[in-house]
Length: 565
Image (cartoon, rainbow, N blue to C red; front, side):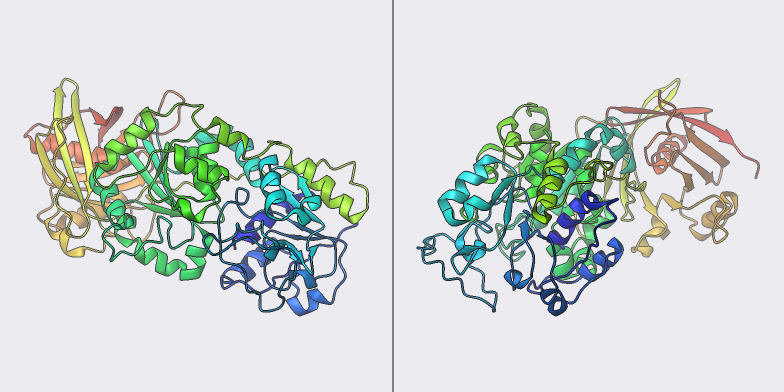
């Protein structure tokens, strides 16, 4: 899947050329084949069985990985990296089809495995380069290639990094990507990223005392207030498709119910990186891309021994701060963000690509040159822009412990701090930074912990106002108060910035947040407005015409409108 997605990056370079017919095939040598047929089908290309592909003569073959009988396919071969250059040491490949005889001394693997994609075992067949073109993104890779496999160095072509170029082109879209993830001004977006490796952030053994992941997932909810931080996970495609999306969701269950969203590994990870305030990562390309565009990174796992010490990724591990179980998660994240200087990873960014923004032109020139035909003059070489993801705000379904404090009465001003509570985690302790006058429990009606609904103070339902199964809001709220007699307030969230609430005494009310200065709707979870109103009413005060709600450093002005019963 990882290699296939990198090939999709360069597909647009052939658009509009009526002289070309594209095909797709797969060597079948990878154990991670799940999802590949569906991905290729979505691309709409004819998919040839490998045996048929080997018997077909092509003018050009483009691959983003080595493996299997790649040398058996007929055509000039161009090989791209499926990550940010070549950094990781892997065991010598056993393809089951060929045993390279390079005639030269191979790297000493008694103490260190060769760097994937740079050793003769991958690059040569019968002592000759397997590829007609080995695409590199920076001269530092060429220097290491010459040292590791001088026979392949003449095939090297510096042609940039199309994945990185797509990220760079989309940087001006950062605010839109943040809004797509429900991240409003004043809120932090934290991306948890892991590569596929036994020594990665996601690859540790949960039974081992030094495994950081279980601690990290539990502290995301306990240490980070739900309305001041948004958390998402970007996991390597081999994690998703090697173990199965259902298994990954099961592993992340507690964190997901607490509001962590797992970003699809093929669709929106680049957008999440651009939108991020901090990336908690490891030695993955994703973490390195984040550092390259100036995002603060905090390393949760970083096995230096698994990397080429001369590689830029290894340099990142020596430069970036490391996450420690011994400190508070929030303190470490804030320190990584506030101490970050924009140019901290400037040198590393420069090694991502020596020709940023030019990969489309350089790669198309290479591909057409290998085919020995002229490029189409009427069609410029362009990559697809990153699409705007669908609106996906956080939706915690675990019980939420809500801490509230009345900061003023004219106008009514309520501070709200929410923490999701999963499993046997203790309730969060109030921070000295907040004023806490009362505490209550709010819970989504779609929670798995249905027994908690009977004793919740606030019950919330998210649905369209005209949903025939539940709505209109007046009907559901009336029904819900009867169903949950110990509940003080029920809220029907029917829009990104509004909800309808009902209480036994105050009746039916509409809460609507004022738009921002740009006219866009407030992105705070409307359940926060409901909790603020509950705290205000629980203090014995009557409903007001407006509330000012504080979440962290952000202020939300909420109109309160009485509705007919």
